[in-house]
Image (cartoon, rainbow, N blue to C red):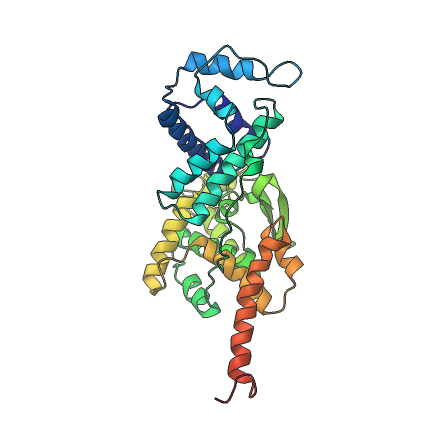
Length: 341
């Protein structure tokens, strides 16, 4: 369905001011469109672009307070005059469709962000979301795989050609650094600091961090990049990397930047080859990175910085994983850990 001027303005705010990733902005946009579709059905209002633009312009007065509007019966008016009862009715309709608690929480987060923005910019008199509570979610432990499974996976890509070496370097880097797959494919040649064995990573919200690169990952990257210079398909691109800004570190077969979807496809291929669980994702390598660090004595603050988490509480979920395994080891090994029965 056609978008509204007010939702387009909100979308620009997410990408330009909040620096949301394109994927996250699309998810928020989809949630907002679903809300608009509900309002269309309930209010019996159809989108008239000219009327919606007029209503949007008239919502904000020169002092920032909501001005009187002459554009009646528009969706923009319905949204801006919406109260907590309207929001609750919408959420009740979603509950009837059996959405998961996580999906419901995201849809509420979208509306919370939207109405906070709308109120701040004077499009609404109040923020109805201040009266809406987000339902509690059960904490799910992140999935991690064992070191032995990691070794199996990392050994799967062949090293006979440049693409096999690229895949090995790609998987080694994901596990060595714990970076997100979006951060991996966003890496440029200039982000690689071989001298200091580190990567310059641009994370969520354009926040930047430096992460150390393990010797195995560094070696795999060197093998891959050395091969790029010798392969006729990539030699011209890679040879000009010092003169060309933002040359991608990981190239696809056409010499362009590798996509997140391609990384997932390659991972699926190697999981099948070595017989590992097909539900393992690139994010599983990130979870495994954090879990294995904590299990081997790394402190939580360091892991938080390496993962690029803004809040320590986001990282603390991994302590539950490592603590659970410690408890299991204790129960198995200590002679007085359990009742004799």
